[in-house]
Length: 303
Image 1 (cartoon, rainbow, N blue to C red):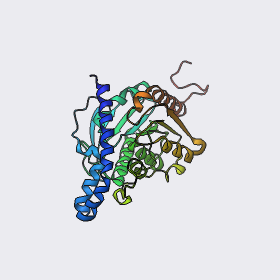
Image 2: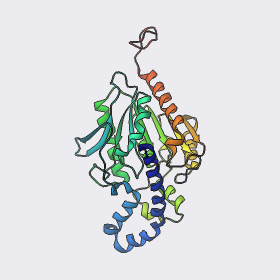
Image 3: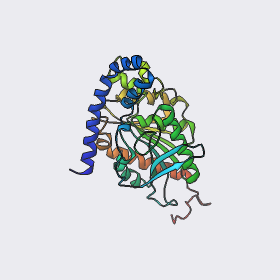
Image 4: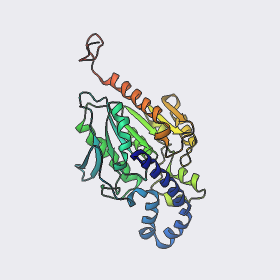
């Protein structure tokens, strides 16, 4: 079995696991109330952030880096800087789903390279090789710190914030708080709360306190152009969430629906659409960013 088949099989297994996890949310409220946050809290956290229970493998791509910020925060990421700086059309800051680790993301690299984009695949606190504990606040702050570091290291490259599933909320937050050339979202959720309650109606709000990941309040404030790609048969994050987010953008966003695609096979069923959209985005930001000579030609071009 090849690497791609294994990756999609793992995603399918994770989908089933997540449904089981949400089914026991009702029992965990008892744990939280009877044991208190000291003991009940970690049990809830492990359900919301299952990637924390996994051990990282060896990265098969890019350059793993641990970065110490001036504020004392440690960021772990994998950098894929395949394109020379003078040829890269932009830099993707990518945020993954809550069951993944950055070491899993080798399936993304061909998408970026074909579009002539470099990429930073940023790990969440408490996941894999990254220190800390995950929460909405900590994940968001890590994402902003990663952006700030990238801006200092690669100041001339336009930034694309990109995320899948839970990562879509992180990318949206970065796009609100920092300047990005484009926001590209896949299987985007409106909030963790709505996603959990879609799978298991009646999940108490208390279980998600501090980890709501509600982006409906962010979308009307976004200034960057946005593309959302979503499967019409998504069984974890329903297509209606993408349509809700699109409605909050007015005419400033694009929604591409992949017919028949589920949550975990979006990159497989929507491969062509994702690749084409990444290339379109890269060309669009490159045409704006590249300096031109007095005749309207790009510098270095013989056109």
